[in-house]
Image (cartoon, rainbow, N blue to C red):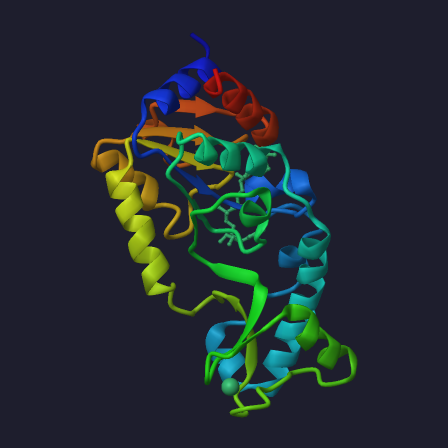
Length: 248
Ligand code: NAD
Ligand code: ZN
């Protein structure tokens, strides 16, 4: 049995399979991952949450980068990787997707149960009163010269609903991600270097609680030694093949 058949078979048998995705699933949609040259992540130093809150100048820097990143996201379409995970969920073979990504492509592909550990770039919120806006509305204010927009209701800074460095993870999403990982019988880690938290720990938790751990990533990861199956191939083609097998 080859790796694709093996994985399709495990998914067919599984009752609580979950996928955990990182930036690597979106590179085939044209969004650079963390370390690819040319990504906004390599061109700008990230603004820490404390700096964001403390300094208007930092907020202006933050927004400059966010507007740039959002252009990339808004132009991107789901690829075979996202679409195959959505299909697996619809046919009852996948319980949920836990993602570190902020690009919203899983939802656009049709995935229903998506746990976003790092928030989403598709919504802007007020850090004071939690009101929300579409990014376009806020970007229009920035284009009009307001380089660090504040909330028109309470005066607090507006921020993308993404988790910044130095900002706490959303407790509800973290709790759900941990529960799904503990209950998983198959845990697919896809397109993540598995080095930053919680990416490093969720696959470990799943494995500890009895899941088969499958890693799909073109580079080795620190968790490869504990994996039951490793596929070092492009994600889109791999998941499409798995989905085709699992459909029969
Ligand atoms: P990462 O960049 O550290 O690792 C991505 C991994 O995917 C790499 O090991 C790379 O070899 C692999 N990869 C990339 N394209 C692939 C492909 N087509 N086929 C197979 N493997 C492929 O990603 P991470 O672990 O998710 O950490 C990055 C952090 O930055 C995350 O916290 C995430 O929130 C954020 N981020 C998000 C996005 C996004 O939303 N699309 C993009 C960049 C960074
Ligand atoms: Zn407000």
